[in-house]
Length: 310
Ligand code: GLV
Image (tube, rainbow, N blue to C red; front, side, top):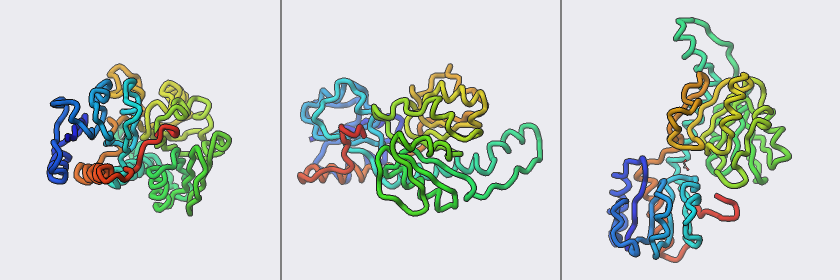
């Protein structure tokens, strides 16, 4: 039996070391050296090329390097009966909390202004705003969204959250649910952070109509998926200054094409889909534990649910 490692844009060495030492009865193959395709039982995947999964006739599970699995489910030829296991290693969640905190401070503490002031050699302290007087809105209240919300609340920010379905309330965070409560949520969100997964329901969920409901001068941080926030609508609201600035880690098309106007917009910061990076060693162990569960006849966790779309 074999595990195929296909992790685009990733230093695979720590992953392979863990797989080789922990899965000694398994042949570890590195894509594109697939060998006999019928021997592939597991794929550790990040952006594995479409049309490949269907060649592995004895595939038992696909293990995603990311929490999001749209890089797998968008494959038009994906076999429908193969379980897909999402990544929920703490290192990934923690990295996303740090990314969110970094950019929240960039806007909240006016660092984005000081970068521009320095170019003009301007010594100009901005007014202090206490974190409790700044409202951060988190879209997406799964494990990652909740942890980002809680970590920002711990720093003293006023945090509101929005999700599709009601979940048990937590202390310190005001929650909104469903389409009916989205306006109330957006009206409060001075810094909007998107961590929703990409599904049919979330594709193009945030368009001009939703962005206009943010307070004037709001900031947008998209670290979920590009196709959730309409890029053209975001650009027009940046251009008319309804939105002050945006940080984008994810895009409709990745890598972001060189002629995309987002690259050169003065109030847009671009990062190359790095908001949630995993520690190769612990994330590989997370996959190993799921392979062991499957081999023992137990359900892997967290399993992609077709009906929810994530
Ligand atoms: C990153 O994009 C992830 O899905 O974890």
